[in-house]
Image (cartoon, rainbow over all chains, first blue to last red):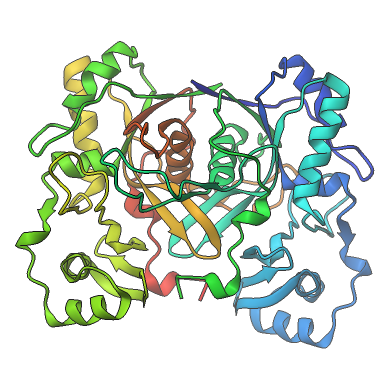
Length: 249
Length: 249
């Protein structure tokens, strides 16, 4: 049986906080066990890593100003999105989808401008610099404090082509196989499997999303217990398809 | 706490079987409770609904023959894919991605040609005709037998643009909100939420995927317990974005 619990009692996270340390009290209370996987939203990781930017400090360039005018967004936010991105995938009224420097194709380069806490109405929150490294540091901090090293997934909510609604995906992983390769396994009839790559990190992130909620009562972390990992750990960068590998267009 | 258990002990499913009835024994053993959600893979639903086609009975037309030659696939399989689809999204060597008549954009129109059971090496399995209706019938059958009506998700594995690996998504739903609309809710700071639509059915399908596995020991159903549904039920068709609403291209 797999169990998923929200990690409650985490207060506001500020720049310089150790995102592992802020979870330790809650995880101790939850009796963290060997094999447990901790899923943490990008938002608290980014806050702890000081990725909050005051929009007042952003000077939009000419390209950002042009795009912002065309799509009806704040030019300073567009400047931040462009600075975080390597390619604009789609710009349309109210919509700005880019390929983030991490390879992630997502709205607004994953930059969050809502629910950033009191006194942060005109701030934006960028993704962590290296979410796989963030996940590993969280595992380190928890292990140092409790003596048990959890698997860690840093999650974010992504929209998707062709389907309504966002789902939680893994943007950083430590100690779990973000991608599980079944190539070479045979199906029950002894034939080669068709769908051989499983986005295991994304499955974990989505499962945790059920426990974390998204609303005013949302919690920023969940604990997943009882998984039997299907392979060796690999980072969330393995989930990113290079532009020339994209089969869908 | 959310609990996810594989539903074990389900035998081979054949045409004409009631897909709800084949689950009843296992669900009785698992003490099905009010509020439980049953996730069932598309494969056993399709088998029970008689969606298995012998490739020997398929006569490929000229378009299927042409595409099959260009991409190196069985022309009979391509004929079935085209017959199930309204649009070819991408045809390349080894790859055929279409928009299924249900609106789902996926490889091979969701047609499965592996692991179909003994004696079915040259068969193909189409998606259920109406997966939302299939889900409702399964809920009906389980309720009639056990007296408890579960939520039901019919799931399938989808590849995705930009990301490696497949994830489980909901192609049919009954008794759960496939899509949850948070529009109008405020975040903790009283501002409107940015990401307001949650693909809740897909989250449930992915969570269940962790318990069902995909390999030789895969099980075709899982039971999810402990969810607090965030809204009124709506079908999986609500997850399908119309072509003209696609923001990503």
